[in-house]
Length: 626
Image (cartoon, rainbow, N blue to C red):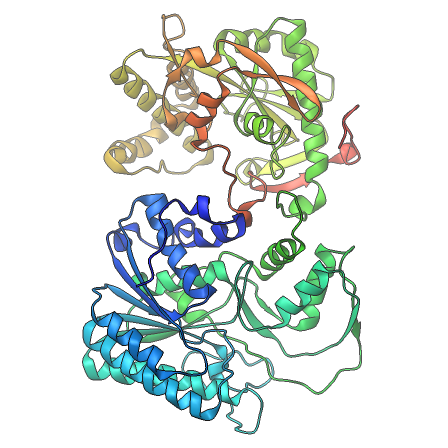
């Protein structure tokens, strides 16, 4: 058996590997209940795909303590030795498993003589005969080559076939993959086992070795800035990132019925070579030096898959072809930089961050003038500590204050901010029901998915100012205070958005009752109750605070002592105040806060639907280095 060394994946993998290894857990498409304490047996050629599947299962133990047990039987098959497969059958016979995964020859070259191929098939047949007698659920990974030659633009469904041409290149792969699938199907039916076959599009990803295809070839050309010319070809292929293959493997095993075949491809991942070149040129205009010849050559077949069936069962791919290409090129470039998608916000993210920096400097001026204590908050504080500036993909900025400083700030801010800044609180704008303060720039637009429903409100570029309020000294009073605050905030927010209060667990019945009752509660009373709950412990001696206004409400109370002392740290070249105990505070907020979010998620934190920077589209904060 192949045993993996212990330790968290984040300590063993690079950021690209960790990104796709954790993809199935992050996807929320696979039930933890169905993974809990399950035993997996992995069998296949000793390659990166087998290892990737193992790591994706390990991630359940890292992230959810799922108790997943994994046994890996690598087949050292070089030159078509059937003995390697017979040996795998002997090892598998001693393993108990709920699920068996065979990687087969998915997206790998065949590269064997006819005699070697037959020898491998003999050994493989012994393996699947043994497995189907011992195990109830077996999944085989295959790929789109099994369909053979398809008509132009014809996307093959699972039980359709293309043309078979024994004289054409690639026929041996079609025959070989069909044989692997047929043997498993026949043995499973004979022995009463449940089989599944997952056929992938052309697989690609950072740190994954597969057979060479256009995505790898073109990405490498761009990463090396290699000048080359290509002929236009009309045939399209279905591609799929390793993120989605790993997720689909677990999804099919746990969420789909047995004795079925499924195709999987990525999101918006059908493309011709010329379309790939255009994606690369749009995202790497300075490095993409691939030219296209307009003489159309003889058409060649592509592998185009119909993935309606797996989607019908609820699977949704997470990584688009374009995003996967960007990740792959940047991995190949091996730049000593933090990965980020450069095309975020239509190229406006840097401008937005400059505007937010200007906000921060204005807040700092006002607070210093009036003796108001404040700290960088949330992701802004995290960026200051981890990046000495904005988190590269962050699109907002926040500051926090204690209640007495927050009230003082509200008294003076209206007279201090420039005329182009609007103070947005419920008392200054009818229809606004946020519990905290937003400062917005006139004649701009920065509407989130929620606020875009209320375009009669001011939706300009915003900056948040929040208060941390006192809570009880005892755990029972903190829990009660937290629950009341959550309910009053939920009533206001859901009444505002005309939505139901969503919750689960032990408070589900309370939330259902309040969700129905909220329609009878006047908004003015709901806001009064919300404000009353936030300030309930204001005049009491308390050693604890909570983020009653912000997004960290559910994290509960933290010691007030963490915000008693201030130090200054560098943020985009300027000194800004942070709590001296920032390590304890950030750990309370984020856990291991030095760990960055997954590579494929490094886009902005808000779902901004409408963006217009107006006259600030060329804004640069005075003195800023960026």
